[in-house]
Length: 348
Image (cartoon, rainbow, N blue to C red):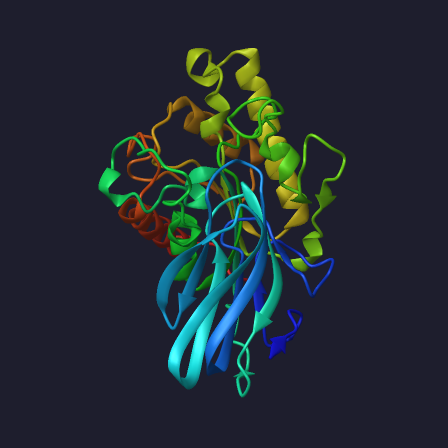
């Protein structure tokens, strides 16, 4: 029994390409398909487009039990989401574990004869969005044996957007999350670690659905499709590569230019989201404190009563490697407590 992927009982979340609603494309981390059904088995066929030479995995939460499945590097993979000996009611969340190193196209959802979709699970009324890098994407988060240490060698198997601090905080706050994050991404083009030799920054990617700097095939995102109440801007750490100019010359021309561009970026978000609460931040990943000083300066210049600069207790000093699950939970607890303690109304 084939279920059309544009069935209204299927709940999608994330910045998704729905140009062909029967073949939705997952691009960003934590993008998901959520549904309930009656039956004993559910299978999903997907098509993977890998671009970074990693191993590629998708996440499944079936009746509250999380697993992962390895995808073929290109072409189709049939995924058994659930296979039980007897019929019953079940709930499935299929989600994108990794960042933009690959894209997943949903091709076919199948239930056995006699199976049927049930009413869709509800979405939270609260909405969040994060613009961030690998920490916000949950990269290498499952390498818990390396907490507080450099990353182990890996090929994508430890990355899980479900355990990013942003996703954990969204669940703490009862909010839907759009996660616009990419490993290695800086604010400014020409810095960071992503997509050499182009090295695009979030200033080029933030308003895109698909982004291909090597061609003219990039497509814009329609901001009318999703309006968050709370926006996290978690950028700046990767702008120190190849030169940590903010540390070396915090009052120099390059530092001044970065602050100007950061302020301009936040103003562009404000134009898109006039009433959102916007939190400016970095993370506990080790970095020079001058970047946080620069963000504090910009926050003051904005003079916006709904824009705040948030610092974690161990901001910039917590770990030399990526943030592991317990560290992400620590960050999420601090972040959620800060949001809940704000004197402005966040969830208007």
